[in-house]
Amino acid sequence: MKSICLKYGLVVIGTIITAFGVALILIANIGADPISTFLLGWLQFIPIRFGTASQLFSVSLLMINYLLDSKNIGVGSIIYSVGCGFFINMFLTLNFSFIAFIPSIIMALAGVIAFSGGIALYLYTNTGAGPLEGLMIYFSEKRCVSLKSTRIVLDALLVVIGIMLGGKFGLGTFLCIFLTGPLIEITLNRLNRAR
Image 1 (tube, rainbow, N blue to C red):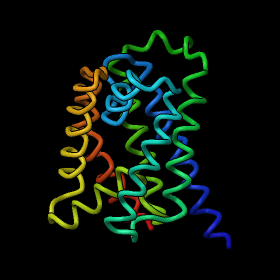
Image 2 (image 1 turned 45 degrees about the vertical axis):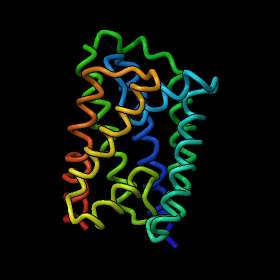
Image 3 (image 1 turned 90 degrees about the vertical axis):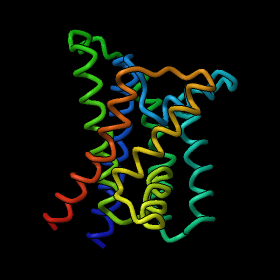
Image 4 (image 1 turned 90 degrees about the horizontal axis):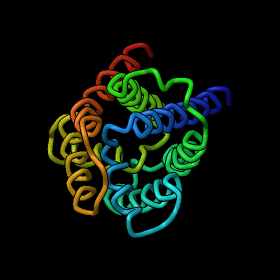
């Protein structure tokens, strides 16, 4: 029972850290992470809160994951998919003026590190992959390529579609594309070695 509580506690903590990372990247305002770029483009046409759009996107991708390979879906997938959007909405309503002195590039890098670390933490629990992570794992296994390479391709695809829809992008977007996959892989490897 303790280990189950610990696992789901880590999923919630990973979800909160991921959401905080997304909020930092958005607040840095030098380009959004790939999913956010996609969502910001989508929000040009559908007037809902950012976190709510994140939840809808996540649940839609979870359904696709379920159809492709249901073994990657679990209770952790649902907690992450619904919780991340909730916590993003919460963080975006907070007043972050106390960190306004931090250069945008540093804030975006801190956001990418938090975002990637949060994802790695909840993936480490093996309670189900998040929506994009499920696709990352599926395509990585099917194509026999690394998680980082698969993530880079998925992120780039989301950015291209997001830009076509009118989403904003910039240096922060490219930091996310090229750092998220490697940081997830490095963090997961370290967490697994520490078991």
